[in-house]
Length: 208
Image (cartoon, rainbow, N blue to C red):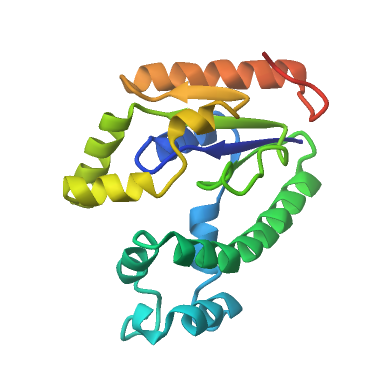
């Protein structure tokens, strides 16, 4: 099995690349989906979040109010780090379980783990290859404003809360520049998969 860590920044186009990878035959594990599952009602994750941040981060139905929680963590790096320390171990436990199940069923599988904070969490050596999806900062801001109906100041604050994409790309095995037409992005994905499949790359190898 070949494992690929996929990361980028908010509104960089990581979800688009994940969709392309899936269409190309990869199995994609989305940690954003898992992050929602580990704080579902009745979970240890939800209890831990409420204990730390208070019941005000819940809706009347008892689920996480993601907008309210986001307003807290994007304004305070310390609180954001606390939330990550709660969720990260729970998320990665599920990732390991899903990866093991995939490998058991298909030892030749190519598994992509979509992790927004992959570099920040020092996980770049946990995969056979790491793909960073990069886009110019101003394009990233305009995409985020349109996607989440944010003002420019709010969009810049959220982007500033993450490691700059230029720093992430320096630690990648491969960089996908998602700054033009979709066809350009798809061509880059296909080239990367061709190289990985041709080499059967493992951790002891480095593609240049």
